[in-house]
Each structure stands twice: as C-alpha cells, then as structure tokens.
Amino acid sequence: MKTDPETHVPLESFPAYPLEEMQARATAFHAQMVSRRSVRAFADTSVPQDIIEHCVLTAGSAPSGANHQPWFFACVGSADRKREIRAAAEAEEREFYAGKAGEDWLDALAPIGTDADKPYMEIAPWLICIFAQRRGGVRAGDDNKNYYIHESVGIATGMLIAACHNAGLATLVHTPNPMKFLNEACGRPPTEKPFLILVAGYPAADAMTPKHALIKKPLGDIASFL
Ligand code: IYR
Image (tube, rainbow, N blue to C red; front, side, top):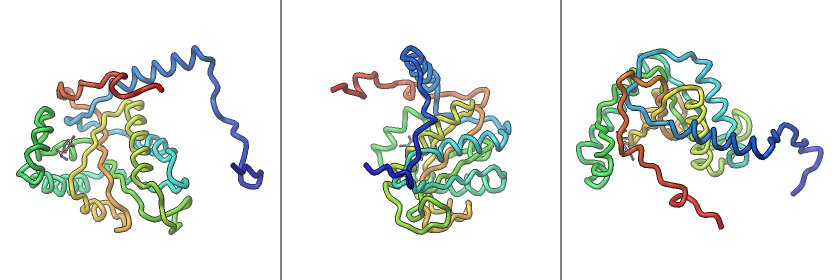
C-alpha cells in the first residue's frame, strides 16, 4: 500500500469511543433502525428541502468503486412532475399485476397487499429518483468508466434510507419496471440508468404495515462467526 504524502493525508477525524460506549451505540442504533418500516400510505405534509439535502449528502458519502460516486439523486417535489411519474409508474405496474410478473412473483407479494395503484407517489412530498451512472469519475463532468456501479449505488441507497429514518422520514423503495420514463421526467441523460425511486415523507395517520414485513430473521440465520 503506497501512502505518499503527495497523495495521502493522515486519518484524523475517526471517532474513538471507549468499549462500553461502542456497545451502547451499536445497541442503540440497532434499536433505532429496527423501527424502520416500508410505508405505503403517506401524509401530504411537506418536508423542508434542507432535510432531504442532508440525507442525500449522507448517501453521497458512501464508499464507491474508485470513489467515482456513480449516482445521481433527482429529488422531485413538484406536484406536476410527481403526477407525471406516478402515471408512468402505474402504467408499468398495471402490466406487471395483470400477468407480466408471473404467478410465483404475485404469490410472493400477496402477503404485502400491493397493487398497481400508487397514490402515495403524488401524496408524499418527495420522490427521490436514483440514477446509476455508467460513466463518470471523481469530479462532475469526468467521462471515465465507472466500476461496481450497482454495488456502489446500492450502498448509497441503503445509507439514504438510514439517513431518512434517522431524520424522522418514512420511505418506500419503489421499482416500476422498466423505468426508462424516469430519464425524461427528471431530465437525466440516457447514459444514466434509473436505479429506483425512494418515496419519502411522513406516514399517513392511518398507515398500515403488513405482518409479513415484521418477520425478521434472527442473527443465527443471517450471520456466522468463524
Ligand atoms: N414494483 C411493484 C411490485 C413489487 C415488487 C416487489 I419484489 C416488492 O417487494 C413490492 C412490490 C410494486 O411496487 O407494486
């Protein structure tokens, strides 16, 4: 590993906690994150843009292949654009639920209760449309090959979801398929591939959550310690 002073600086800002504090922080963060739910009924209450900006900045701090940060977050708050995106998404979803999905997929979704109607896409204050950039670089305008694009954008999206939850915002990952319409709706170039739409806002007062979503695998089923 080369750490030339020309290209590297000392790692200075890493927080050091006593062991008990680390244990308390790890436990507290878990407690905070397990209360996250995917929400499908949103209130129409507005959320100030600066909260979304800070959540996106957190996402943008994610690790990425060669630090090329191959993501773009088009944060849609305008009613007209949300309406346009909802209409295009519902058109895809109608085909999906009418049979394109196939029987097994529809069976897997039955406990969640989803269907082609997505009113929350207009009701929620923000649709964060996430794009993956095939080409780019460490600075805007660079045109190099990007690496580990899906891994990088997936990690950033996870951090965005955690940041929203931490800020007190409910979210829903929404993935109409195909999502080509998002490029035009968000004014993004064809070299960017729509990754997913993150709906963000407050839950509706009468929001319900499927029991199915409360089943979380215990540690022994998701991890081994070797
Ligand atoms: N995109 C559809 C279908 C859907 C697919 C999966 I996998 C889900 O976990 C939930 C929904 C929709 O949003 O209804």
